[in-house]
Amino acid sequence: MKRRMFLKQGAALTSLSFAAFAPAWGQGQSGKPRLLVVLLRGGMDGLTAVPPVGDAQYNTIRPQIAIQKSLRLNADFGLHPQLEGMHSLWQAGQLAVVHSTGFQYTGRSHFEGQDIMQTGVMKPYVSTSGWIGRAMEQAKVDSGVAISIPMPLILRGHDRATTQFPNWMPALRDQDLAAVANMWANDPMLNAYSEVIREANLGKSLNSMNGVSFQNARSMQGLARSAAAAMRLESGPQVGLIDMTHGFDTHASQGAEQGNHADRLRDLDQLMTTFRDEMGGQWDNTLVLTITEFGRTAAENGTNGTDHGVGSCCFLAGGLVTQAKVYADWRGLQKSALFEERDLPATIDVTAVYAKVLERVFALSPKTLANAGVLEHKTSPLLNGLLGV
Image 1: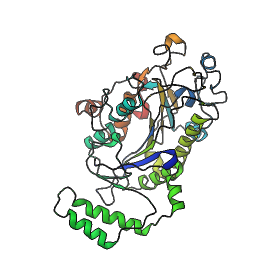
Image 2: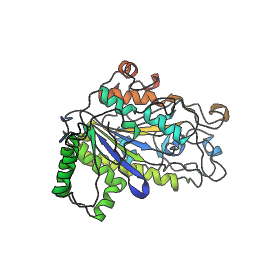
Image 3: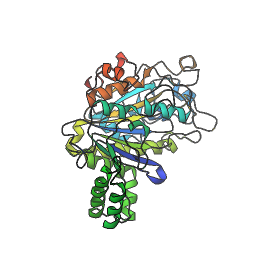
Image 4: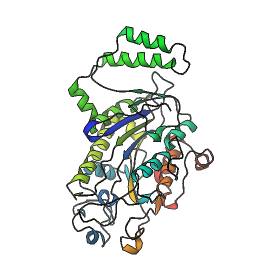
């Protein structure tokens, strides 16, 4: 996949990328499942997002930031009250949670963790492609477009894509387009993009955007609407990505029902519910997956926050979810049960979750994933039946 696949959201530092967008770049994706991946950078605190209300140690180790008024999932787990829209998905049987999950990476470095999160390779900085990009290439997903500037690593590896970037600047003049086409005419790699630019410029001319509408487009709900507007089309992209950058790194003043971490969860909830509403009937054929590089410490620190940890949780939402369920191998929050007596352990390897996603969305078998170098993954019998595979 070529470079330039990011859309900065501004103050919230959020971006939107698409892959496999077909109308002007390739054959359609009619009938194929849609996948929206949401990167929760910074290390989402799984014990805040999905508090273990059935664990007696929870309030003890988190006297200031434990969630007291969670939305019920089952006798053991609740959902943060800012995730009210996602709770409605749970009630509709369209939200699953995998808890105490993560990579077999325990270094607690954002840089290393985010590299592993995107490449799917357990040794950082050894791969130049991402596990979704490699899966798209293996599944022969058609050519694509991204609404972005630089391309996120997770989508690299699929070499048929281009970009669009919404802004309020005027469309290119005809003479500028002609100059670019002339400059690239004898370059076999760049020549094909002259027509891509011409098509994008035509769309910009027909859909002018002022400063106000651009600000709306960059909001969390605006990004969800943009993703859905393309992905709900029969010929639209099969894969999209929204990148919430560093918002979950709450070392201090994390808060509980309200606060910094709660605000980010509210953003996630708005994204989920807006995307669901805007997808219309296509929602039944859609999966939304959240990923994060690591979790937070089980106990709160001296500044009412949490530090870099290991295990977290991930959400799967959409019509492709077969049942509302919390998948977990829960060991408890006693020190003896924690990783190095401080972190929620990754008792379910999150790569097993990703393998299920790729199997369901791209029809790639676990054997193909392993043999083709798509994703280094482990299996877990606890995930049997997740997404119906």
